[in-house]
Amino acid sequence: MNEQPNAVTFKGNAMTLQGDPIEAGQKAPDFTLVANDLSQKSLSDFAGKTVILSVVPSLDTGTCDAQTRRFNEEAAKFGDNVVVLTVSLDLPFAQKRWCGAAGIEHVTTLSDYRDRQFGPSYGVLLKELGLLTRAVFIIDPEGVVRYKQIVPEVAEEPDYADVLNALQQLA
Image (tube, rainbow, N blue to C red):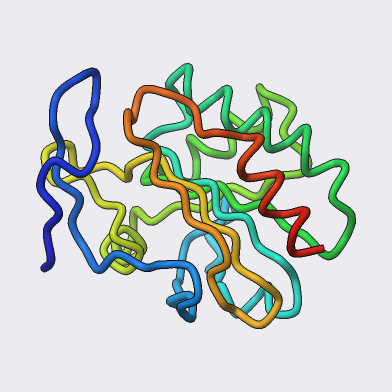
C-alpha cells in the first residue's frame, strides 16, 4: 500500500496517509459503504448528482460533529442535484444514534467499517490511528473528482469557504 509520511498532523504529531491519493481531474474510485440501516451504498448510487464527500475520523468528536453539522446546514441550500455524504469508520449504529441526537437530515452518513476499502482507495487512511483523516472531495455528476481538500491538521475543520466556492464553480 502506498504511504505518504508526514502528510498531515494530529494534534501536532506527524501522521502517515495510506492508500492511493486521488487528485482533481481523476475518475473517482467507486466504493461500497454501509448505511445506517446496514444496506450498502456505492458512489454509483449517486450517479448524475454532484457528491460532496465529507470524510471524518469519528462523529463522536467535537470537530467531526461541527463539520457534519455545518455541511448539514449547507446541504439544505444545495437542491436535489447535490448530495452530501459523511464517511467515517464509525459503526452504522453509532452514526444513526449521532444523527438522531444531532438532528441531521440533509447529510447521509456512511461507514467504511466492513470492507475498509474507502480509506486506501482515496488515500485518506491514517496509518498510526487506523482512522480516516479529515478531507473533503467534490465529485461531479459524471463521477470525476473536481475538488480535493486534505485538512493539514486533523483536529481542525476544513476550509468551508473554499469547498463552497468550488461547488459554486461547478454549478
